[in-house]
Amino acid sequence: MAINIIKPLSFLHFKATESEQLIKDGGGLFVRIRPAANGGGISFRLAYRFEGKLKWADLKAKALPEARTERDTLKALLKTGVDPKLEKALEKERNRQQQLDEQEAITKIKARVTVNDLFIRWCDIDLINRKDRAEIVRMFNKDVLPVLGDLFVEDVRKGHIGLVIDKLKIRGVNHLARNLLKLMRQMFRFAVSRDVIEFDPTASLSVAKMTTKPTERDRTLTELEIRALARQLPDANLLKSTECAVWIALSTMCRIGELSKAKFSEINFELNTWTIPAANSKNGKAHTIYLSDFALQQFKTLTHVASNDTWIFPNRDNSNNVCEKSITIQIRGRQSENILSNRSQDNQALVLTGGKWTPHDLRRTGATMMGDLGVAPDVIEKCLNHTEENKVKRIYQRQKLEVEQLNAWRVLGDRLNLLVNADTSNVVLLHKWK
Image (cartoon, rainbow, N blue to C red; front, side, top):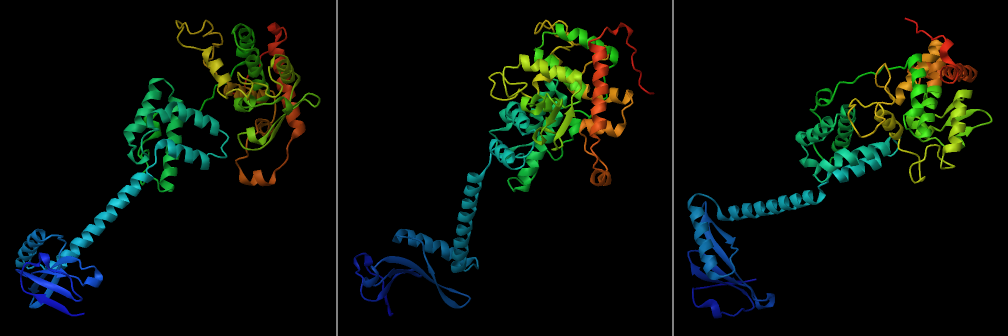
């Protein structure tokens, strides 16, 4: 299509024709009038020479005064040895890149995840099959999410983690602080693996330095302490079900979490067995306990005091089992170091000469007593439902030693019955092998 170049005149009233027109304004500036068929729009162009060649640059201006200013700017740029057309192309690319960067930033902002969101995702994916999932949720809801929950994951720093841990240490629950730090580390590593964040804010934190060094408990109750416990329990103002739980934990060597979740349907009062389902077992394997007369009597007592036909230890509204921590908390509350505390008049009701004890110490005590009574170590391991650490033995030695386990629990139960229920003035105390 032909282009007509017209000398400067009052082009404001110039009308579009069938061909494109360029009207000179001076200094290389041209007004471009598109053909009438294309709407007759007006734009501005700059003609200039660079390295001996005639070049054209389209201007952004929409009005003549702006076009003249832009012309002067580009001509000044030309004097510095820069090609205005190339500079405009570069500017366009810079603007495009800026738009992309802004869009990326907006996308990142929209995709930002809070710690609350991360925790839900972690629970739904990594914790879905963990047996302690409910307990982890409880701990995070109580001690972690109130501090970190509303923060964006990428904004979490070591100081935020330290704040959570310090609050726990002030409360004196160092073991809980240790466990929560390890759990938070698992959650943030999950976030790194899912590309939610690039770096784990807990990575450089030492669990031992931040909380406490791991300790391996070796507390066992002596037979003298068991006799003392039998005298003190009735006056400790505990629930009758909790009293029974103490003796069941000692005589069956079960874990307190397994006991807390027990159902009456799992107890066979004819065969004298308690079957712990795989879902409640720590190692994911069902476990049958052959109940001694001593242990069986505790379960029979529970049938008279239980307020629920399903759960042996129901919660307050009978909708589920009691919290796993409930029994432990009751026992710990009867061993308070603060004798002046008025929180409970029974705060020292279960203090024993060997120091503080926990329900898990009862499990260890029962196993120790079995050993002292001559039960073979491999039978004790079966009674404890421990997983064999040796892979070869675990694969090839599959014997259950059921008769041996039955006898082991019977021997333990008979000894406990002698200590707890009989006239113990003439009982000969067992001595551990040194």
